[in-house]
Image 1 (cartoon, rainbow, N blue to C red):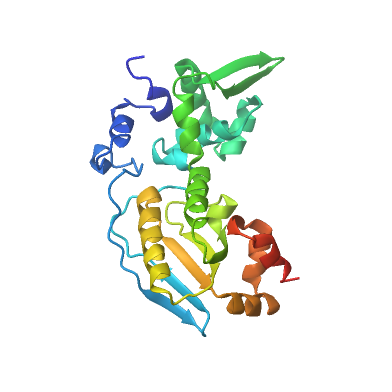
Image 2 (cartoon, rainbow, N blue to C red):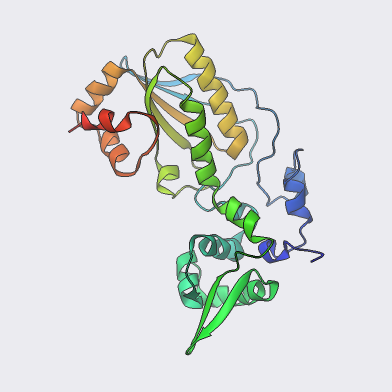
Length: 268
C-alpha cells in the first residue's frame, strides 16, 4: 500500500500524484499528459476557412503541447502494453480469457502475459480458473479502480461538459460532436470536432463564447477544438444538397444540445 498506483502505472505513484494537483505537472514525467487545472490559456480566434456565405471554421492556436488520447485516455498515464490492457479492462464487465483480453487491447498475447501477471499480483486484476482457461477481470473494489475507471471515461466527461456549456446558449438551435472523438477512435493529435447551428453567426457575443469554449477545451484535454458553424438557412441548404457531413452526423454524431432530431430529419 505504500505505492498503491504501481499496479496502474507499473512504476512509483509519485508521477500520477503530481498530475492530480492543481499546478502544472508536465515536468513530473515526460510521458504523463494529464491536463492540469490551470487558468484558460489566451485564445487567438481566427477564421481559417470561409466557404461561401455559410460555413466558418475556427481553430485555437496551440499554447502548449500536452494532449489527451481521447480514444484510450489510460495510455496518457500508463503507456504501451499496460495502458492498452487497462483501457480494455475498464471497458469489459465480464471475465475474459487472457487471450481475449489481449485481443481486445490489440496487444500480442506474448507481450501481454507478463503485464497481466503483474496486474494480478497488484490485486487490480482478479483471476479465476474455469476448466483449462484462466479468466481475468478488473477488480472494481480495488482502491485504484475508481481513478482508473474515471480516467477511462474522460471522453464521457468531455461530452458532459460540452452539453452543459452549450445547453445554456439560447441562440444555438443544435450542436453535435462528430469525427474521431465521437466514434471513440481519437488519438493524441485528434481535433475535437463540433458542428453547431446558430441564429446569428456574426454576433460578437457568440464569437466571444466560442473563443472561451475553444480555450476551455484546450485546457480540459490539450486537444484543439475544430468548430464548424451554420446558420439555419445555410444548414437547410447543406442538408438539401445531401452533403456527406450530414450523413456522418446521422451515423455517429453525438447530440449535444437542441432539437437535433428535427434538424437531421429535414435531410431525408
